[in-house]
Image (cartoon, rainbow, N blue to C red; front, top):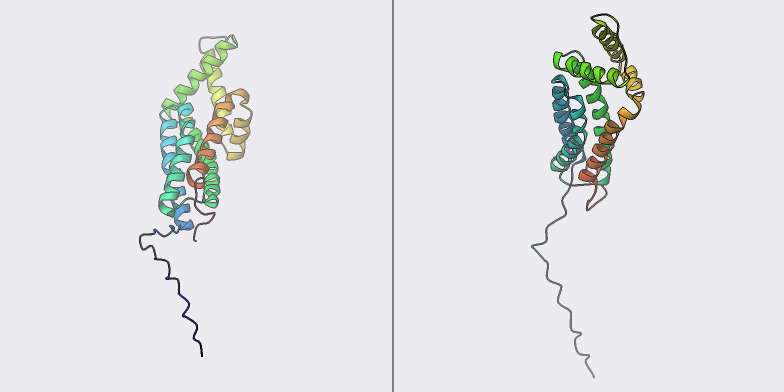
Length: 198
């Protein structure tokens, strides 16, 4: 009678207790962070426009995208492509709303009117426009300003006015696109997973 020798058993692999678990993101909190970042920069945008510096304010589009993306990741716990897309949408909507609000506030403030008058004077001088009468320039400016305020009467009219600016609208459009792209890169690229936990 023969006995088979026992089969040697392979010991189990040691468990790495120092392994860090993958972070779990919270999509809703990420959304809240994105909105918070956009609103903070929006308030700064309107404040600058009220001081008469609307062109500089357009550069805040990039800051809006970056801060919105960073706060989305900070509150949400992790980067993700869906979160990056949400940040893009939030930044786009907030940029449009901020530019409209800044225009509305700026054109009614004294520093804003002074800046618009400077732009108007530069425009008419480049076109070599001649005004009759002592106050011809001021009368023409008030008519120009009244037309701009009319464009401010509702968002659709404002967007039509902005679209008709032609070459003058290239810089704002570029800043807007850069801000949207920066928001997506900050919140969406370099993610370890495609989803956040809701």
